[in-house]
Image (cartoon, rainbow, N blue to C red):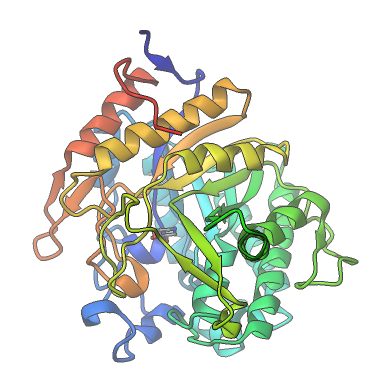
Length: 434
Ligand code: IFM
């Protein structure tokens, strides 16, 4: 057997976000949220996170030691625009240093413009429920491109709009802690408007710049082939994936989010799509659950599952075939695809090596069949602050001891380095079962 090669110039990286990795920021809505008792597992705090606001370089060197050639990070809106319309040159200066350090190491930067956090002042004005927010975001992005556009060309506009909406406005596990379907729909549409405004600002900065949204494609499969289960799975998929994907394709917002005639100018002008893939859910029709649209979502016990979260359930089923299916589905958008995140919480690293091999085999298979996948970014280089799950879920290729700041390379990290260096999967890797 020959090794399975990836295309020349394929990007191998890891993904991160400002709030989860930088530390020491008191300016966004999460800094307020973590003061509330009981909202974060074990009462954890983000604290110094991975310390990147002070010093990013040693972790970039670790990325290079794993033969990486790309690095995805996000910018913290609350640091750059701490008061409405007032931009902080010191924050821009720090991001210039960080991006210069990324580039100096031969890593291609990919920068996310909105990764779940809002400046406190924006949140106090209603966040993404405020009709002015998409345009404000567009102005912020134009400022960023003016200040940092010489250091990066690949821009992710909004990270996982469906997850932001679900967690903050339906489940209420994230700020602002609401549970309101009408608000959730408005927020999702506002994030899509924000994406369109950001694409426009990125494009205005020059033809070398490329912009795309990052969608978390959470697969939803019916528990049986019976009609009620099929229909409920279809409906869940529309809410979870279809609404965003069709909007990107047509520029229109489908019912129930819009009238179908709601057109967002610029929505369908992305240059690429970012795919975050982690897991899938199964759904069954359940007449006893009207508040959940008569659906029961679950992971079968026989499925292989990753570490347990604060609700006593696993973070999700480990299902490599789902990445192949997700790439095939996104290919219909006819845009280049970046796997902007995939990964799993696995404290003792006994699942991650196989996870990496099998998920990359899925990527390779899709590419062989013609999918235009340009790169993969694993979540994440170092253990980091996992939002309402705090510090218990460990996604890092490097384990982090928060007390000492010490990093320890996990075997899965070393394996990822071997694959990136070869730009190929080792020959002996078994294909994931279908
Ligand atoms: O940590 C998150 C990240 O912020 C967005 N995508 C999923 C990751 C793991 O849950």
